[in-house]
Image (cartoon, rainbow, N blue to C red; front, side):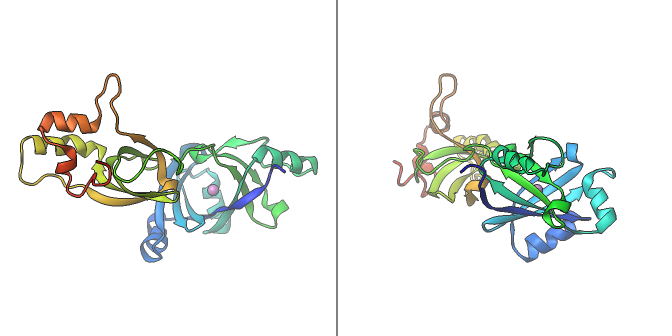
Length: 252
Ligand code: CO
């Protein structure tokens, strides 16, 4: 059967001051901030916190006339909506509308992160706004990709839009640890090595859950751009694998 609920994706909480509330949820409770996103069309800024198999979404109003501002005025801070992840939002919509239960606005909408969403009014759910959300197909790399520890990759994070270059130290379906640096620091780092400077920018080891990874590209030559590894070696006359202490040990 299509139109099956997969899990509780997140609980949305309307807050007046996100910095104050992040102080509790992130700093004190220790939930990791996965992404922050402003959705001007909805008049809202959202903060997604990783809560294990689900998320807490803090919603702050950007617009006096927006839905969150109205919610806060009417009810104060509190649970604004629940979001269930579904395999096929169209199939569920069809089933519900056939029973006379219509979504808030007709049809399926494009939500944050490429999701397709539909909302149902609190009066049909028992007092809470319900979001049904279908994830876009395959936005995260899967385990069978030809990446393994020791490979140099360029990592694109979904949000905030960070790009990193580095060597995979460990990798499984849930996440990877990368020893490397911000893509923007790479050129400086290479320059320091080319000039044999004393205190180069040092790569750091960071862990990224797959949910934060937008895409990952292998470092390889392309027709008009040589690989990072090749550029490093041509500019410095040194082998990248020997320069990055402890790096590439399983890849070369
Ligand atoms: Co939401």
